[in-house]
Length: 341
Ligand SMILES: Nc1ncnc2c1ncn2[C@@H]1O[C@H](COP(=O)(O)OP(=O)(O)OP(=O)(O)O)[C@@H](O)[C@H]1O
Image (tube, rainbow, N blue to C red):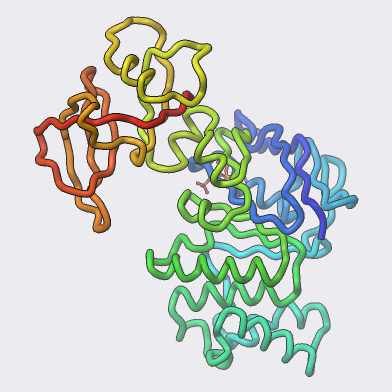
């Protein structure tokens, strides 16, 4: 086990802006990195460079002391001891589950008892022991994805690359697969890099979250840190369900803003420069001492109500409530904290 190091990694396909620009980050040993960002920001290209399917045009990738690739040379994918799981499971339809899982071993010349033992262990980990002799066509989507996971686990890779592996699954299955990934990560000790559109998935699984935008790395931090202290509107808008308000706060104001300062900013009609302030819905609460805000929408979400409130200058503010408030009605709210982006 070692650190995976991306150093000024760049990939330019030659069509305008590079797909990946100057990305430097270190994935800690045995870490679980979630790579997040809007469509087209370069996530898959980073993953493909790590796997060895694309060569960087600049910068380098190292695994510990070992140089995997740079602009001059690249270790072929099969020499990297990595495994990649795709959104489409890419199982061979004519092979059984066990044969699919054991295929990478066969390619490496492993057969007989060792083959059976390793396949058995991998299938047990993803709870598919009883399905060993089935063909992929006779499996559910979640089971197929678990076969793909077992196939990547069977060779004990140092690094596992997952490209939106849960995108085709329904909400319920995604939750149970998240658990499988967590166990897989704990037991294998492999470094995992997980590309996803779904930030809640990323927050649930990752030791670190990296957010990309337009080919660049915008921020990388542990999930709780990136949630509490996002850098800029891209990260603030992507992580969690906050509202980004434009408020007149001074440049030298602290990043974390308390209620008195927020109340003054919301109440001020000043034309001064407005800055992006992120307000999390869980920090907005009904408060007799607060300011009256109109309820524009109230949606029942099962465990709570999601409210959309309107500030005096018509900006929308999301909040949670434990009871319904009729649309059009005003109630007093305060905001316990905001974060200047
Ligand atoms: N082989 C290629 N040739 C030319 N351009 C490419 C190639 N692969 C990717 N790109 C471009 O590079 C940019 C980044 O693509 P990439 O697939 O890495 O984004 P992504 O963040 O994974 O997007 P998504 O979330 O939609 O999958 C896009 O503008 C894409 O069109």
